[in-house]
Image (cartoon, rainbow, N blue to C red; front, side, top):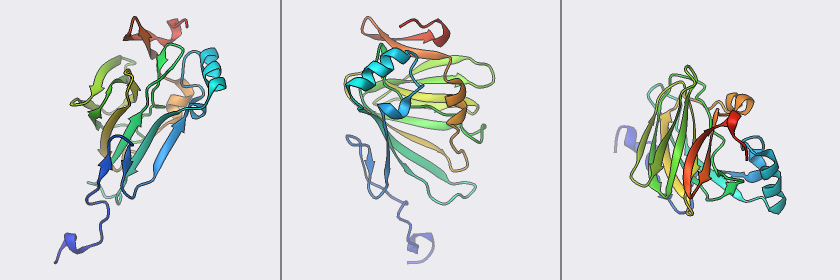
Amino acid sequence: MTGIFALDLPWLTSRFDVATGAIDGVPSVQRYLADLRGCFADARAYEAALARGNPLVYSVASVEPAHGAGDLHYGLAVVHPGRVGGEYFHTKGHLHQWREAAEIYLGLAGEGAMLLESERTGETRLVPLGEGHVVYVPGYTAHHTINTAAVPLAYLGVYPAAAGHDYGAIADSNFRSVVVERDGRPVLLERAAFHA
């Protein structure tokens, strides 16, 4: 065989397991409740939940081939069901270091949502993400995923190799809004006005 396919390219094809969030041969990053201090709006409810245990909130396995200008990276994530106070379990969230970079999320299993917040205008949107959903995240947009169901939410994110992840910007200022359960449904509330 000649050409690119004769090379050893272990990332050229991968098998993944939606139930576990694992990609064959790829390490997984696991985030437990203790890793998410400051991410939930109700600090007292967070401390009370942590005193009861330290559950796995989400995991991500990422495939990141060489950093060529046209390369793509992708990650398989699973967000587990649960709440801190009324706020649903969610990922930390991030902006991209290369702010212009967009991202595509493909819902594989479960039911949830994405919180999108424009860095430029502050506009916030809550969009559904579940099995069969595709969400386009434009550049300059902070985003995180939220599990709003009683089963794990699994999804695939695809982004430019040059995008990078800026978690610090979110850690410093957090999202302006929170998603909480009200009467069995997810509701978007302003963080500043949220009273647990």
